Length: 466
Image 1 (tube, rainbow, N blue to C red):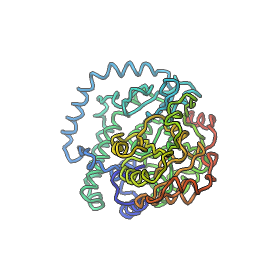
Image 2: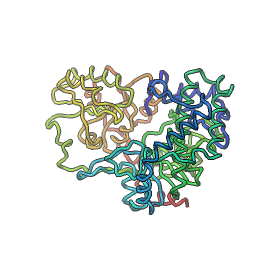
Image 3: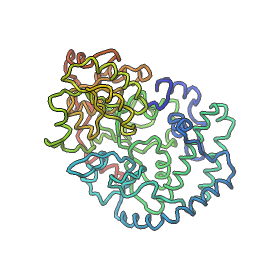
Image 4: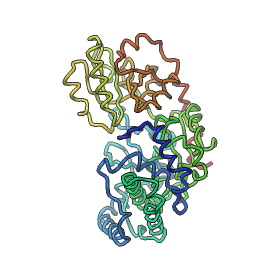
């Protein structure tokens, strides 16, 4: 996760949040608890990103007019949706939401789902995305789904009324300042309007179960699934740490966990990750399944353009993190003049970042390149990687490479957790990473410390609900 404008560490944020929220029972609305939706609003800070629309300060008539307008506009999408639904008639399981791919033999394959498709058969799955990415072999996108008369059902109108009453209650106004409450309202708006659309879709096409990438920011999907009797199983998609906002919840919220829109199960890479999650209150041990390393890793060809890039030079790979570009730019500015000609700094921007963020470095220094392509191939090509607390640290471990975490005070809780466990090496901004790399022995932590082998039986168990 990235800070996205935070001015405190994750640990400080959690302490401040729960000092206000208490046991989170103030977020109970009808049969659910909106703890995670509140966290979503405060974490993402929608008002700072220009997303400032919500309908909870408007009348029910205005909201009804919005739905009616959406229904009219969506009429033109219905024929296409009916055709897509026909194509997935045989699908028993739903997978959502990642569109991360790797390229192999000119094919774009899903990092998170391809091994599962290959194991159980592609036709058994409906693949749902929310980015409308044309390179992904998905069946449906959230933008394909439509608003229909279900938006005016008694249960949906009841939910809207309850959400509006909750958001405008004295309790919520006392708990949050004006900006915080506005962000919570926007998050709740997104939750409600996505829920209406997904719930209507699931009523048209029932499934046995679902595999979900990233349970946070997807509360609408989880609620729609649970409302339709569909079990939700989260696949670990990256780093899980005790400092996380959306993992390892404190014991004080234990009474509301069952209604707080968590998945029914979570499948993790290995026992290391299960032990981290068991420090929280959101999952019982039986809900944490060790599925192993289910991610698809493309075979790296000996003819790979990445492996043959910049012959004769040793590569330092900088894997950036969203909203932390200033720290990477600062470090590269410091490091570039210090290293010998045989070394090259390759910056691999985060997928959510624009490459242009780092273009000035490339123009300023002859030994800096901003690169694109398969992250696994770049890690393979590099001598070591530099990041802060990115998941690429564990990708590096899988390939036997050393990883450094830049010592940035704002991220100190995450960094200390990684470095104290020997997962990454601490790197101060004024240190020469080449010299430090040369002075250190190879890491003691290996891939087997974090990743078990892919376990088909565990996936079969959760898909079938056994």
